[in-house]
Image 1 (cartoon, rainbow, N blue to C red):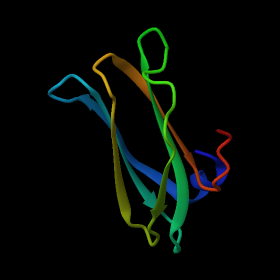
Image 2: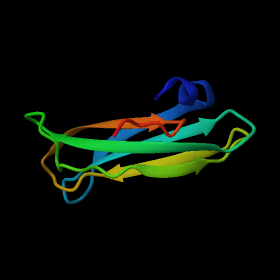
Image 3: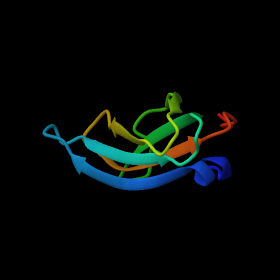
Image 4: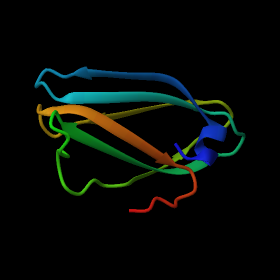
Length: 98
């Protein structure tokens, strides 16, 4: 998370598991501590055991996270069962460099 996101968002839960097909599923539960909604851009990348990305181009997701301390649940699933790890990036300014 960038500085603005860390100032407003509190990570309440971070879990992962394998689904019935063996795909890696990452889950976050965030709480926006600010009063106003917070527009964010998110990117999730899944990687194989050797560190190569599961796919070349990863889409940027744009969300508006509601304010007033509401919990927000987010979930992402890998494209293949070969995914071994993942990385979640959250940018509250909309300035992701990609």
